[in-house]
Image (cartoon, rainbow, N blue to C red; front, side):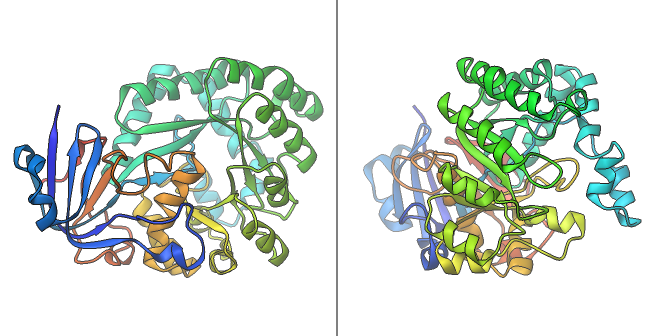
Amino acid sequence: MSHWLISGCSELLTLLGPVPRRGRALGDLGIIRDGALLVRDDRIVAVGSRRRIEGLREARRAQKLDLGGRVVLPGFVDSHTHLIFPASRADEYEQRISGKTYEAIARSGGGIRSTVAALRRASPAALRETALRRLRGFAAHGTTTLEAKSGYGLDWKNEVKTLVLLQQLHQEQPLDIAATFLGAHVVPPEFRRRRGAFVELLADRWIPAVATAGLAEFCDVFCDRGAFTVAQARRILQAGRACGLVPRIHAAQFARTGAARLAIELQAASADHLEKINADDIRALALSNVVCTLLPGCSFHLGDAQHAPARALIDAGAIVALATDFNPGTSPTLSMPMILSLACAQMRMTPAEAIAAATINPAYSLRQHDRAGSLEVGKYADLAAFDVAGYREIPYYFGMNLCSLTMKRGVVIHSKKP
């Protein structure tokens, strides 16, 4: 049995409070100044002021970790990533700089389909090594839990290859990984003229097989212009829910198709992107329990001036979360601090709102709010320490990694040398 007495927290952001966070509550970080935590094995057993925690009998026997006045918060929960892919698409990045749109590149054989072709050629061992390196990068930026999707295989062999790899990574390395089946990312080339047949294949065969094998917790669909229609997405997500896979949905990134309303209809865990929603959609989402997962890294990387309407969603009372959408085409970043910077500067979220949207609300969307997303007694000892004078400096210093220590389930998994 291991014990940690963690002290020297100039600001301890507990995120203690209601779950999920809405409206004004999104900005309540539950800050304890000069705070401390007591950890037994993988769980938090006491949280409070340094003086009170150090006075506990159990604290006297604990190994001491003095963080030297750093700001400490729950480990980030990144609830939308595409972790498994073989290589970058930097050539397409240059094409977009020269004026080509994302959709034009996709129509010419690039985009998601180019990554599909590369992943089908890649060995599981090569994909595993690349993913492990990325996971170390996530941890170094303060992320302790993430969601990861399939969707770059788009045939049975390679979708299973991806999901099995995610399962192995979850078991073999410290970060928690929640797996999502995204067989409906785009229509694969072999079904280009038989879209309906691919939808039925997903609904009737692949989804039941994924669920029976326990390879995923969630089922996702890219429901947008150029991908799947609302009717097709409904068929796929209903099939997933019937098999016990919780719906998630890529919604309204490029066009308002009705995907956000479908998320509400199906009681999805999250509707992600939402750049093109309107005022009626915002009101409807605010009345639901669907988490609005915003991905400002995409707009930034694509050079799109239009971001999701974070301010309107928050003011209406919707549940707002932030995620990296780490992927090779539209958001090649694994830095949640950078996402916080974009959320504040481009979407007018306050630093406190951005932190809550990167911790407790995404934990709720992953159905892990009982064990992650806040620093409370009984939850995992998942935390990140930042070498800043106050929490507002985390998004303020954009593009800089100021995370000096990351702990996952009571084990230090990243420590920056002084």
